[in-house]
Image (cartoon, rainbow, N blue to C red; front, side, top):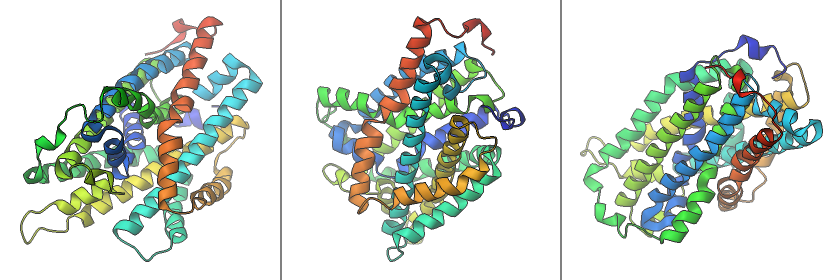
Length: 372
């Protein structure tokens, strides 16, 4: 990064993992379990397992590229390896993807609030309500966001797994049969396409100059994040399929909310979904703030601007405008499924891996320059 902020802000290993896990795992609170049920039927969890394996393989390639250029972000590496113009074009694609991704999530989280808690509030008002804390968090900076992610992550995970445990009386393992669900070929196909769900691990490569450790530990941060999030998503999907069997599992727009509504601990302990709403709303704020500030940092790097904060108002307008573009919630869900979850792997994994192959063939970078 060309800004002195990267010399002032140095985030630790734990903060990097926390940021990445929230960036990757927030989709569990939206329609991700439903999509797995649609693609794999009773074996939707196997798609997540295969996707995580493919994602780790891609990440190993990308982390090897980072080792050849220690201290540099993937944005800088693109320009070094591909040249000024091709590198610029690749960085613009990454910027557009993260802006589009953030706008879709802003719309989906707002729609989820309407479906679960505030059915009569206009979508534009909720989008703006989410945008305010996004702006405040991004203005405070990456360090504030990462510290918040580090502190809140244990509570988010504890609340999530508490929901799964409380649903134990409703578990029915026979609902996971047949084991291969939709069949071996669909599982393999969607397992590869669904690597996009873990593609956001690329944030580690984008923010590499902000970390206090080198590429070697960055590799393990990425692997750790993918593995923990994959296990969490598998558990959520398995419980979802056991509690809400096929074909009903394909019909819930907010599956985790439906799971939390199913909990019954006695006549005095009902309606626990109200507590769950607090957990996923805070997770949404963090996920959106991370994407927002990352978009600002990418824009600053691409156009060699000294500071990122003056960019925040313009980016906020763009993200809000894109969030309000889809006609309705079903159109938004379809856009996320087709463009973000199916084809996002091309931008997040394939293109950086291609840059890594080019760096190796052109003998650019120096593996001896890596630091632990």
